[in-house]
Amino acid sequence: MEPISSLSREFVYIPVEGPSGGEAVEVAFTNEDGKPAETDWRAAMWDTVTATGADAKILVGPGEGAVTLPEGTYRAWVRVTSSVEQPVLPGGLVPVI
Image (cartoon, rainbow, N blue to C red; front, side, top):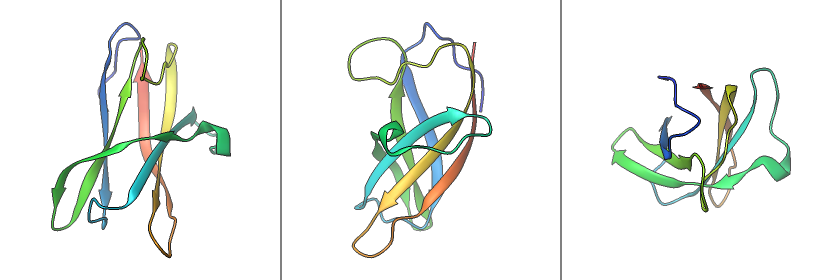
């Protein structure tokens, strides 16, 4: 992913193969080698739904309703909850400058 300014408030998009866009989706950010704890998960939304999957999106930056990330590099994680499965997928690195 392209770097994001710590002063910027914008959506981060994480492509996910397979979902229909109707499932619940959450995103967590950890350090590069970490795994998310239950308290790390934040509600996200689906965007750009196609036949092969969808993009999970979450607002990042300063201000109410956004996930605030200080400068550093984070690993994004996506958790999709359907009626049977709940996969947790690594979503790549997010550099914040």
